[in-house]
Amino acid sequence: RAATIEPQETLVAFPMPLFDYAWLGDGGAGVLSDHVAEAMEFELWVDGKPLEPQIEMKALRNGVDVTGVLEAYGVPFDLLDYIQISDTLMQLPPMARRALQEVDAVRFGDDYAEPLWTTQVIYYWRQRFPANTEVRVRHRYRPIVGNWFLADPDMRDLDRALFCTGEPEAQGIRNRQKQAPYGAVLGTHLSYILSTAGNWNGSIGSFRLTIDKGQPGNLVSLCFDGLTKISPTRFEAVREDFV
Image (cartoon, rainbow, N blue to C red; front, side, top):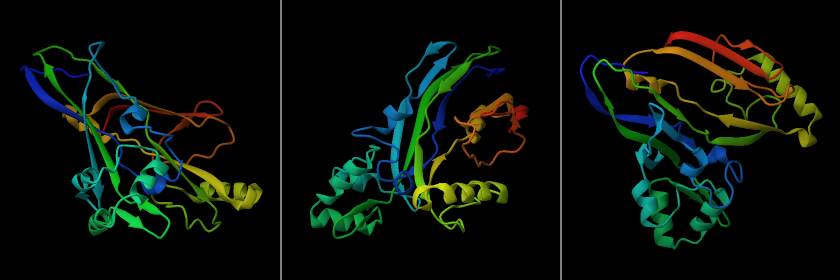
């Protein structure tokens, strides 16, 4: 919701969580020819009417924009299909490989090509806010999900700080590893951005976070305080004037 004393028209930008192909992994998130925009299914409504936002997509490596280099050699960095991207990279001529290695966007081996860039996706649109009028903006999307295997009981293949994983959660993972084939448990990584609320120059008046982990036996580790368990699989947090 937004209400202004004077009429305003502004560019509203909604950045999605950054994701890189290292943790998306081989077949981890996409299937054949899945595009990022299609997978996210971003939808926007203003005062109940659908609005088509524009999309900006960039490829970053170590904070540097490498989009132009990838585009110059026909690398489909907007795909989620890891195998298709790798196959495209393997077919590149030596000159193209050198150019991509110079910006550290790809790691080439004798029989593999590993994409190293991070993809940034931003949806944006121009929005008018009439004076003394409430404007209701609603959007929904499907986050990009990555996965990897947790096989080390000492958790060296898990960034515990990133996921705010305490010892109880770590012990739960170890217990699963003891029962799993080859001692490997599949981990899933999902990021969500809340700081976008800064577009509205204020707090979120009424904020509700609901997480459903699917099955009662699934383990969840995340960075958010004050969650209350409301069912065998659901957790919820409610905040007023949330920042």
